[in-house]
Amino acid sequence: MWTDGYNALFRLEYGETWYCKGCRKLIFSDPINNFVNTKTHTEPEFGFPAVGIRREKEETVRRATVRKMADECRMTRHACPAGKCGSSATVMRRYRIEAAPEYLRVALGLVRYHSGGPSKIMHSVKVERILDLTDLQRDPSTPLHYRLICVTSHQGPSFETGHRITAVQGPGQKYYAINDDIVRKETEHYMTMNPHDGSEATILIYKSTRPSK
Image (cartoon, rainbow, N blue to C red):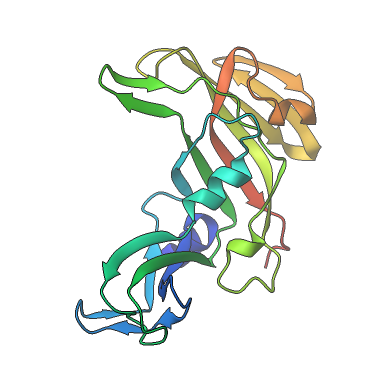
């Protein structure tokens, strides 16, 4: 079916497992909440939507993506739910990639919400040319590397206004900057410049470097 091909190209699937924070043992089932520890999720949009950005000097796409997949607290129990450590413990939730797409979209969450309403985070994030997600897989024995092929950037202090421009890798390892109907040749280095032309990167498209089937 065509959906199989579409999913292989664009859909990111990741699995969810639970473990005890106290003894680190996996929890294979939770009879109280009728949960079996074999959940698989598929992002409704391809890739990683709304990857949170921190206003740190060394913030990178890789670091933000790792936090997106980081372990998080699920609930607190009075006894170890895995029945191993015999003490009260917190249940942790872990996410790992199960099926990686050919094309990976990373949408950077540059919106900050506060009492005055949403505003744009004006912070430079280092954009890596090669994104290594090997360690974020359920089975990290096979390398999972992506190469940057497209960057959409936003000009302006707010997403309610402003302008978008795109840098893209074309055929023959050539690079272009596209601004409305104006197209100019650029260098490979331009792809990872952030900010550039008064704009901040918002959406990144990476292509898998593994051999195509």
